[in-house]
Image (tube, rainbow, N blue to C red; front, side, top):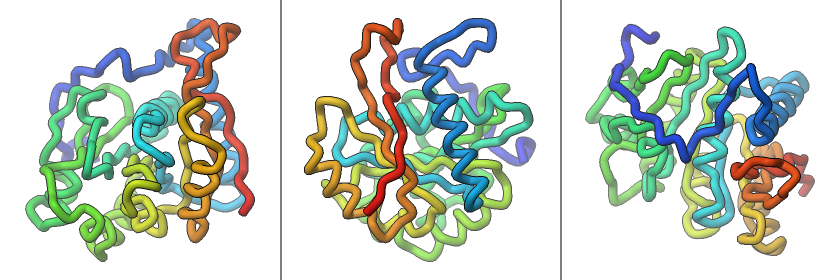
Length: 239
C-alpha cells in the first residue's frame, strides 16, 4: 500500500495536534484514547470500519477530532488508518497536516485521478490521508454518487479504520448524503456554541444513519491541566 501512495513531506501544524507521548500523561490525549476504546467496544458488538465525523455547525472542532482520533488509532501497534477530508466546501485537514490539497477526493469523483494517486502517506506513522481536492461547484452530487460508494467499499478492504471528516449537518446536506455510505457516525458538538435544540435537530438529520455517539468539544476545565480540553464525553444517542 505505502509503496503505491503519494509520499509528500507533511509539515504538521502543532496547534492542530495532540501529543500522544507514551512517556508522559496528557489529559487531552487520554480523552482520545478513551474515545478510541469506546469505539472498539462498539465494534465488538457490530463490526464497522468507516466512521463519519460531522458537527451541527461550522467551528465546532470536527476536523480536530477527526485528525486526532485517527492519530490515536495509529499509535496502536500495526493499526492503519485512512483520514479523508470529505468537506469539499471548506477543507481544513490538509492545512493541519501541512499536506498538498490535491489531487484529492473531488478529483477522483470527477474521474480525474485514480484511487492510489489521491492517497498520501506523509509520516512514519501508519496514517494515510486523502485531501478534499480541487474546488467543485456540486459537492453534494459528487458525494452522493455511485463512484463514492465504490471507493469507500474498496478503502474498507485496505485499512483498519477509515475516518471521514465532512461538512456540518445543518447548513448543507452533504453529511446526510454521505452518511449511508459509512458504517457509523459521530456528531461533534461545541461546548458553549451549540444549543441542545440544535444538537437534537442535527441528530434528527442523521436518524437514518448509525449514530454512534456525541463528542462534546471545547470543554473548559482547569482540572484537565491542558489548553486542549476538547473532548468531553462520548455517549450513545437514542432516537
